Length: 350
Image (tube, rainbow, N blue to C red):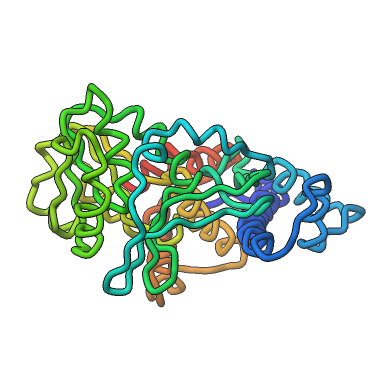
């Protein structure tokens, strides 16, 4: 990487890196606030004030005020239970609670005014990330599977909202990697332009729960088939090529999703159909942060020898970035921002 610091204002680059750090801090802080709000009463008339106090922000401080106004205020909003009541899955798929082999099919409750992520992040032209955190003014019940008492999969508002577009765009023969509670395949299968949905799932217990307790409640069950297999092995065998539309959801969040996403991107680069990845915007945000780390380390004098070893998957991603950008030149902030766009990131991935 060759950065022309004579033509690039270091302060502008430092501000971009500061925004990266604030993005991470805001995401972590709001995530923690969601847990806090589940156990502590929140005053709906002072919601933002409650968040500000929890984060211990001093709005007379310029940096705190910028953090609050750019990432906290736009993040928080009330959401309505009624917006989810007409959802086909919620109205029709109501299995009886069930336990087996450390798994529990059950119903969970989001408390009144409890904060929760309800959709994917929003990113502006300057790469400021805004989480979308909502709260209901009444209780909200939803279906979930627990594994060893930890939520493993669910049909909460975040699941519904982050899959909406991918479901709407599905067509023809659909192949889904990751079964979960069957929300995606069932919502696809009710569409007239979807001929069938095949799901690849490696956890036989999850398949059994779905086939015995969820699928029988679905009126178009003949359009759905579950295959017991590993997602990557299925692709290696070339079986995905028979389908028109692929949806990949084998991760729990963007953090653990990034390495899997990159692996799928490499394996599917010659696939001619349409591919969608759950939480792709947030996953690309993780990838962007890794690239920004390279710019940050260049400013403090890192050299090639710093990228020859890795301690974990994220180290490896950063190291790969170094070698992918080793011969690239950046002579303006526009050059840097161009590679940070989703198109620039996707080009690096390929």
